Length: 279
Image (cartoon, rainbow, N blue to C red; front, side):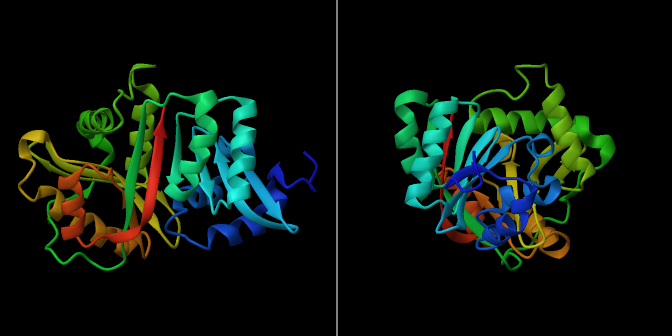
């Protein structure tokens, strides 16, 4: 597209404007901000395109188009433009995820050609900026490099339970194991491991200097309801605030009342609402 078009694929020349836009809400947009900070806007390095929507010559909205389709600061006109481009090129993503006020309208536009979805979920978006009011579990720590195979079954169980499909079905788990190992190498995987048994685990999936996002929170089913997740999240929040970023966020399915209660006890507060459309 011409650089004068309202919607075009962004490149490295657009980085200052993209960073300024992402800085408007560093908690909500931490996923895209972390990817751009690490890889810039080159599609080959990023593994995705970033679409930009302009109004009055100014960049006002973004859409990350990779394995996930993620709208950022998306105006009503931008939602229509992003949906039109996505519809014309065909579905290449496994999910549409982001603020519900953008994902909901985008999905209504895409559903006639992309639907049906496997699941559509409303997810409260939560943030903690101070240490939890409950004592952290002192046994929760960063996972060591030699513990990848210890933590991997718990990661697979959590993913399968949460998403509804196994992350190892397509290639025997090669890519998923590499992703887990990378989080461990980066010091972003946390767990309580008792005599080789993972009692709690969580990962920091995305991080910038201003915010980070937790994913994959899991306790074995037989041990749920004992406060393990609350104390575990208190430990993750404490360490993340100390060594990663000044804000710790996550989003949770609205129907998961036990998880929502645990996060509330751990000191998380509302920061909007997300929506995920899973294929």
